Length: 135
Image (cartoon, rainbow, N blue to C red):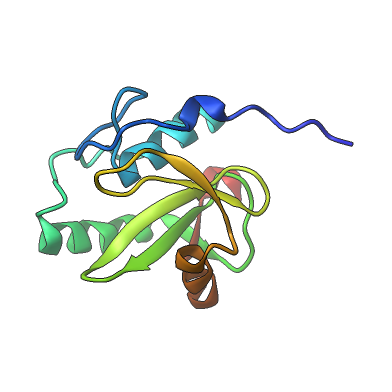
């Protein structure tokens, strides 16, 4: 049986808008940190945008999607869009098979099973994205 990598250093990171490191992260910052540390992939920072810049974030998210490959099944390192009320841009990253690493406002980073109700909804919509270097 293959031994799973220990991703515990990504758990419990406090939420902070525009956070991009192990001390503080927002949802995009956590995905960015994971991809950089685990796969050596550098993705755009976008820290100039905060969670209150809703229209600008939506515009940037649509532009960013053009750089990724939409996929039907999930692998570690894939980004999952998670629809949330009033927002259409929350994201998480697949860490282990059937687990997603994510963080929400006023919270800490956590790993959730893909059958979690919030996550399960996004799985039905198949909003899955893979960086070209992982394809």
